[in-house]
Image (cartoon, rainbow, N blue to C red; front, side, top):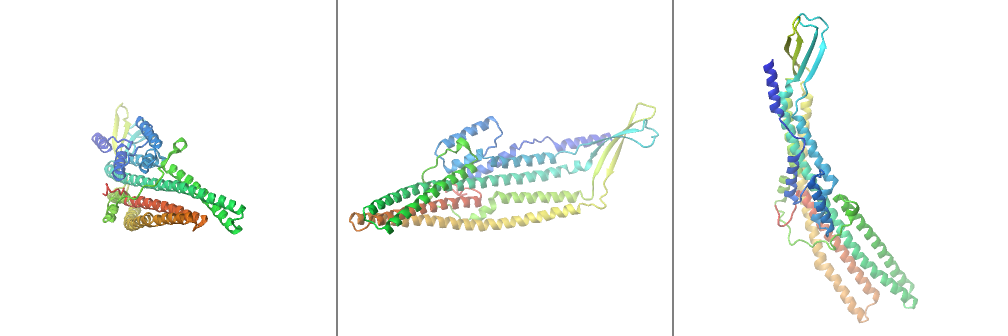
Length: 456
C-alpha cells in the first residue's frame, strides 16, 4: 500500500507540475497577433512601472494633433474595454491551472458501530483520493489548454474589432468637424445675403416675396449649422468613448481635413481566401471545435470506469501501540449513468460549432465581396466629386461672378451659386468619410490592415 501511495504522489507531482495563474504567455501571444495584423501595441494595465510609461505615451499622443493610428493606439493602451477583454485571458489561464490540479484528498475519521476484534478503541481514520483524477488529469489539461488557445484568438479578434470601431468613430468625428466648418462658412454667406436683402427691402428695391425667401434660406442655414455643430460634438464623444478617455484627456485636436484617397487599392484578388484563412474568430472556432473533440474523447474513455477512490485506513492494534494500515478501493459501477447524456451533449455541441464555423465562413466570404463593392463605389463617388462635381460648381461660381460684375446677374443668383458650391463641398466631405469608413469596415472583415505597403 505504501508503494501505491508513493506512486500516486509521484504521479500527481508529475502531472500537476507548477503552473502560474498569471497569463503572461497568453498576453504576449495576443499582443503579437494584434501587432502583426494592425501594427499597434497592446498593453494590459496592471499598475506597474511600465504602465506609467504607457500613460505618459497616451498623454503625449493626445497633446499632438490626433491621427487615426494614434487614436487606435490610445484605445489599445487606455480603454477599459480592452482591459476587460484581457481579463478573459486570466480566466482561461485560471481554468488551465485548475484543470491541472488533483481533487483534494478526503480525510475521514469515525467510530465503528461494533467493537473491532483487533482495534481498540474502535476508532479509525482514513485518507481517500480519487484515482480517476490522476489518470485523466493530462487529458483535462489538454482540453483546457486548447480552450485557452481559442480564448487567445477570440480576444485578439475582438481587440482588432475594437480598433476598427475606433477608426470608424475617428473618421466620423473628423468629417463632422469638417462639415461644421463648411456649414459655418455657408451660414455666414446666408446671413450676409439676408442682411443685404433687408437693406434692399427697406430701400424699396426688393419685394416682400424675395425678402421672405432670403430670410427663410438664412434661417435654414442657421439650423443646419446648429445640427452640424451638434453632430460634431456627439461624434467627438463617441470617439472619446471608443478611446477610453475622459476629463482633461478629451481636449484633443483633429486634423482639419480628412485624408485624401490613397493612390491605389491593395490587391483584392485573393481577399476571400485570405479572410477565411486568417480571421482570428474563425481560428478560435476551430480551436473550440478541437477542444470539444478532446472532451468527447475524454468522456468516452472514462465512461465505463466510473469514479475510483483509493483510500488508506488506519487503526491502532489491540493491546499494543502499533498501528495497522490497510488499503481500500471504492468503485463506481456505471450501471445506469454511463455518461451517455453528457457525451451526446458534447457531440451536439461539436456539430453545432462545426455548423457555426461553416456559416461564419460563408458570411465572411459574402461580407468581403460586399465590403469590396462598397469600397469601390465609395472611391468612385469621391472621384466624381473631386473630378467633376466640385470643378463644375466652382466654374458656375466663377461664371456667375463674371456675369454679376457685368451686371448680367443678380446678387442672389450669385449667392445661390456659392451656396450650391458649399453644399457640394459638404457632400464631398461625406463621400470621403464614407470611403474611409468603408475601408475600415473591409479591414474589419478581413481581420487586418489593408495598407498598400502591407497588402498581406
